[in-house]
Length: 370
Image (cartoon, rainbow, N blue to C red; front, side, top):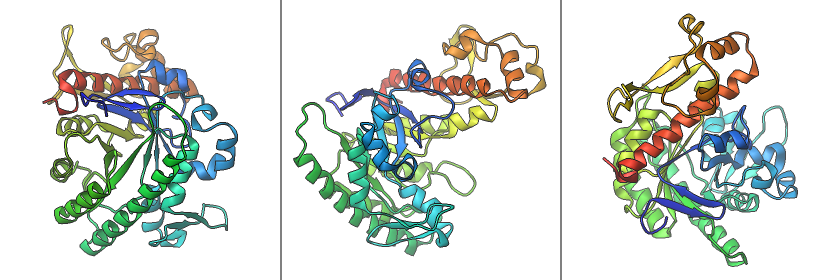
């Protein structure tokens, strides 16, 4: 992060923080292209090495010149390591693979072959793909998992983080390029156990990373944000380090975490909501937007019959391509007839909602605004 703690300086550009990174898991944010993303004010995206190493595959990505050239996105990319995917794939279905100190062994769906993802391989792939921010492989758990499971995950996460750092440093030693270098993030695990979160954070700080990530599922079993533990984790890490909130994308949750000092966020929620007809709208009083806080935004459900003849844009205050050119009635029609244009226009709007939200938070005073 630069001196004023308000931007990340990366090989493919500067990112003003706090910032929201839409998930481009397979190299694409579904239904939109790079120009749509830029038009919506997206500064950076998240891509996932766990999925990309399988499709289109590492050989293809490298032969096309890396992620930026392959997917025509010249702004920064955060490459996630695959730890959460291992959790969702293997911890919830042990027949799909195994997690050991060596790494992750998994069987891609529909195939008999085994794929091995070690900490070393994860960093090597992310670096060869051209990631601007690379993430250590971690052993992800659910917040409600038993203490012994969390303890083992923290031990393994620290072990893997040390190996990831060593691999990153070895690759950087052979790097001849000038300009900003990629950043590497360590991920803090430990579930709801404060002593384990502290143990993990202190060990990762001792190893030394450019920033840190909020590890594990950020919600409890009822879907509520784990506010206390998330705030505690931010307090464990000195303020000068950026912190990434993996999987946090609900507007209220993003606002809460940003005010705690989290700097970047990634999630598929806004784009998935858009495709399902759930569109985010900032509330206004006259010509002024309602201050960020309680009841400052709402969902508009485009499938509702009341939008059938509504000639207004989704939001009078929104400057996105969709709101400047199309009515609620037209979007309602597209949704009802299941036309693919609806998905694109809705996704553009929800992404612009998120980038406008981040700009408003930055105007409050950045990631530490109150």
